[in-house]
Image 1 (cartoon, one colour):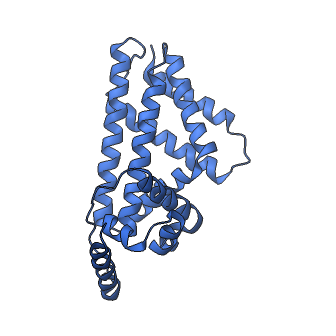
Image 2 (tube, rainbow, N blue to C red; image 1 turned 135 degrees about the vertical axis):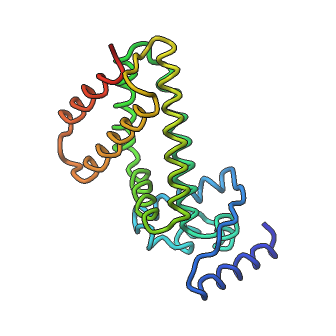
Image 3 (spheres, rainbow, N blue to C red; image 1 turned 90 degrees about the vertical axis):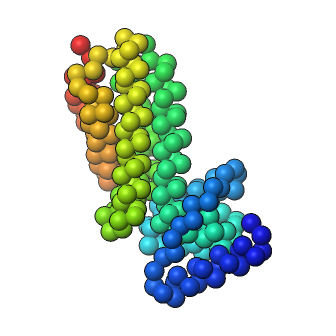
Length: 221
């Protein structure tokens, strides 16, 4: 990013803030180590301050980049939030696919999904906070709502594809349309995550077991 680009980005941001409305995101591609620093900084800031309190100033300082660069690549902090959730989802779906590829039985498959959920809640609650913040934001912003819906659609189709492949390989026996089952699985995971984050000291073993029983009815003979 040149000095001229940075200056133009800063001027655009100041104009948007003066007018009381966010600038439209340019959605320029950003990859590599710097992009990951920005994403991580946004995740940590949202977990600590919420979306409203997570300004470009906070994120740029934590990421070690200029505020103008954030505006240049993402336009608004809302678009940065979308990108952070999108990238996290891509990584997690890829990791889940790799894990599920090792399953040889339906029980293996179900246990791996339950393990993946519990690891996410235990090891990376910031991601869940980020996703819930994006949902809340989508209820007030039509542009974000459209992007959130597209993210939901894409992850649903990806999981449905994994379920279809597992059935083709004889690991699962699906009792409903793959996309419908994927929707149920995500709904269970979202609900479990919300409750487990709300009561971190509670023993949720029986809830997880009940969830596994219900999932088994959809995926096995």
